[in-house]
Length: 250
Image (cartoon, rainbow, N blue to C red; front, side):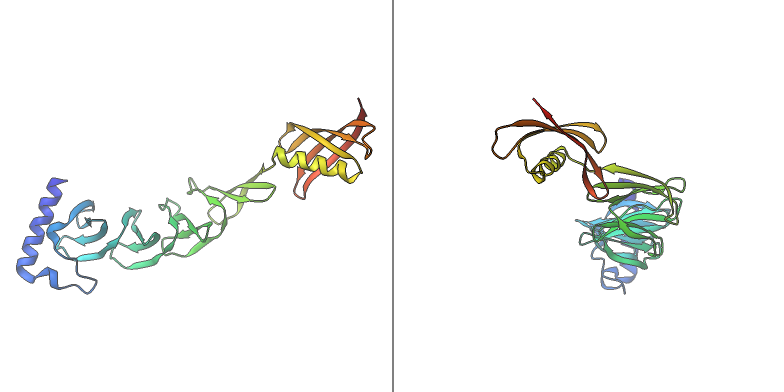
């Protein structure tokens, strides 16, 4: 790190003595190069530099490639992922802004040439030119590995876990149950109430994913007779279903 700082300082001194760097640049004034800290190098011609909490990029002649106005700059494949005001964008190695910082998240690009991104609470994929390749409709998304990625669609009763290819086509699909014991209890109580019974405590036991055995203490309106209402509660795409209800005496 010290060696890089010394190299930058030599470049800075040479450039400032010949052309007065602090007063020029169409992109922006980079202020005094003496206060730069070199964060990393890109090949042997570009340097990611920092001044306080702001990041930028300069070349070997200390000319600004990207101004000191970003909260972070990271090289991904052959483009830079830049962040400003809490949002992410893309710039190429010449300093041209490909995509202004408008996305909540931009992950690193993989060998697929795609990046998993987040915008307006939804996830999708873009290419290095900022084009949307796979629409922003998922609730989560992973980077592509060997041509496949995993995405999630959350629903009220089920979450769908999908494995997709680089064109967004579904390779494999799996449903994950969102059911809760408290909702199964309520479904059982509501069923027996709809049949005219007074309901006491309901106990549920999970039989399979999204399926519970429910036992509810029930009585007639006058509470002169008490029964045990037994039923299977199953969560479907349409909600909780009561299956095979039985009334048993004590």
